[in-house]
Image 1 (cartoon, rainbow, N blue to C red):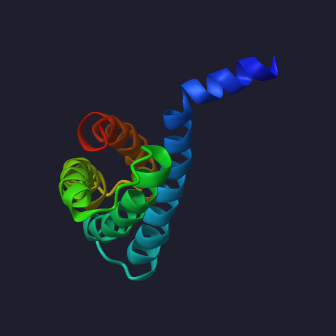
Image 2: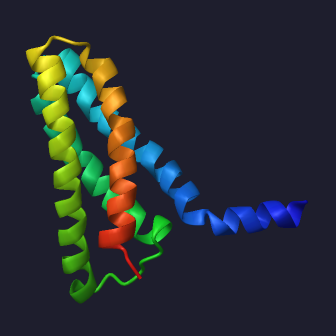
Length: 137
């Protein structure tokens, strides 16, 4: 039984670890978004862009070594990898910001709830992009 669990964990290691760091990245995102939106009263879209920047930096620094086991920190590896990473995150962050802008800033839906809803979509998109475009073997 223990061997079956170990085999299952090894088989799905990247997804499981990505989910752990995805939750942590989402936490970083929220720790920036919520004060910007609720305390500073910035628009939801502006708050999201600011939170996105912090989350992307955290995600790259954790996803590279822990999720995708990429340990080469030479400029030859990091520059193209980081370019692909930020590029893919710009795409998902742009989609998230557009949805938040439309639903919260334009339609006056709850900014805290919409941030949570869009986060689920973004985690899925970011995993696929990281796996296929950024940290490919």
